Length: 419
Image (tube, rainbow, N blue to C red):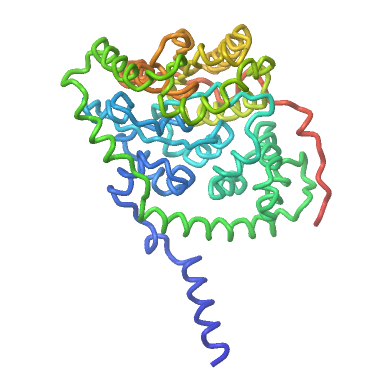
């Protein structure tokens, strides 16, 4: 009477943990379709739905952050549905997802992304002097993607050690004892590891199985799909994709929704976010620069992962609202250096690049100081349309870049041996 229920519960737990994946797995077409626009943690931070989506040629992975959730009639998901482009955008990003987050995801999906077309939307504000902060990384962190990285049988490389140390700098990773030990072993140069490789790996594999089962169950039910909004916005577009007409249409939408302020941002954004503190914000960012940041190292790490899978990638660099940055007192020459530096990094790694910097002082490309909308999406739609029609390259960039942005000093720290 005492031990019977305990034994039964233990048997059920072990069956769930080690039973055949086929019993728990299986992602429906509907789940994938809804997942393409949900941008929910279970989808973009999961494994099953993304794997199934990218095993087919139907979905185009678009990596980015919060701008992808700004659905209006010119959004790529609306454009693709209306004009039957042959591809369906699969949106991968949330507020706070930056290069390091996407590195783990791309690393996990290396088989599914091989020889695929991929779009990556950069955000200038990622390149803060201190890079992604603890709060944003912790809020978007994906344990299953981190464990996939930590358990891979890969050669020790400076890039892999850098990734391990970078992850170990965040509290959400430090608070996971098993993951931390796995990463400390990766980060330590040489055969003498601080933790027993055998025991640590076995503990990690058990934890991964738990995360895998959770992901398989969550993939049955997708929340937050934006498909209904996309279907509604489709009706506003003209029958033929004339980009000049689309730009005029986008301009008219922007004019109607930004008529209560001089910054050409959405009325409700100005009223709620800017107006209450407008005077305090004037000249408040005179010293802000995006020229030096750990984000460049994280970006390099992520680009090496894309080169490893021979992905054909288009990087998009959005504008920043010039009226707003002038009001904040930001140095325009430093902003231009950010665009120069990020463009050089992308192109020297062999990828395609679209800069929208020239539109920084043109209204209605952004719905607020930083997020693409209206005319901005028209430019992206136009470039995506052209990019998707181009044949895949015959030769891809080599995996290891000749430019090494990775800093050597952090890799030399030794962890105390705890065997």
